[in-house]
Image (cartoon, rainbow, N blue to C red; front, side, top):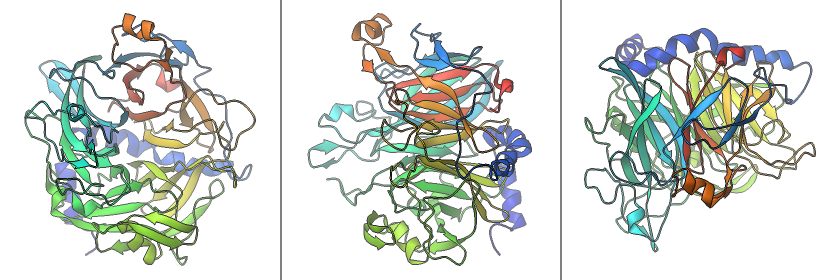
Length: 510
């Protein structure tokens, strides 16, 4: 029986869904589907998205409630508290690593009379000649996958867990280390986080360990240690985001491998959920357009649709190699090589991924000037298996390389920019990266702008001696995720700061 329609599978998963699934499922089920459905309203007027006025109003610099520094711009009425700066000493005595990337809310629980949220944050670090830089290297109780070398460097990327309680940051600690470039990931429905390595090569470290895998990190490592065993069934590739469909337990995965990637689906063999269950393996599949082998989906028009199906990937651990594809010779992962051979579609560089209301929302961040391309957001309806382009930016002012994305419990789509100063644009200078909201008609608007530009003296005066100085306003945003009640937006500045933003969300689409 197909796992998508198996009532036993569905019943087990609904029974195992923990606090995050319950909190997110209801509000999103009621609202999120309107984003993709309503976006067709813009089809008659334009073939690409346009920049609109924000329903929240213009942005202006706002001082951080924690340090007093104006880290970001926000609309009137919004405020934020920073935490977990690069170099800050964590609750476990270790310094906070840098390169703050993907992040997720993995658990909400009661602690006495308090409400507590635990987040897991990725640190997209790769190599260093200093062994002390390995996350948690000095602590035997911090799980690590690899401490081997490749050449003269060490595997140093990993994860930290953060605790938010009753509207305040109260703690953080190292939870996993020894992985290479953990870029993004995804929250499970049972209180853990999948940390995804983004590495394209087939290199093996001096310990004999391969990289390019997914690892599971628990919300509370005092109760369960992170597993140092990779989830091989989910593939070895340049992973980006993972997102679970709470109604089926199926996972949707993106890969940031330029011009050699598709959307992936993983159907776990163990449908019960819980720590370690994904290690039991399953089926890995790639997305294909019905009747079109290797459809090139890099340049759709706004609201264009495609009927889709899945093709099997027999060996998720296969090595990558050069692939002679319809877009030229490209470096391809082993999973994509197999999916491509069976007709899988081609995207530019897929990044963020989110599942809600039976739809998979995911981004393609690739930017080129010829043809004009500055990013896309797709929605795959899992019931009809119809893929629709709900945001098409051909102008970096409209949307500059959408990376991580999330949906709010009210159904609004928010995406993080990871662009630069070059690309198709309307002539205006790009000086800040932005957090962008998506309008139901397919247009975008600016919710917040990066404003990190501080001298060494300013940062030292705020007690941030390990923070990076200088103008960082054109560095990326990452890891955006709302609290289950929708009151707080947690988000990272990749330069090394985590923010908790609150304000009048009901005034706009978020």
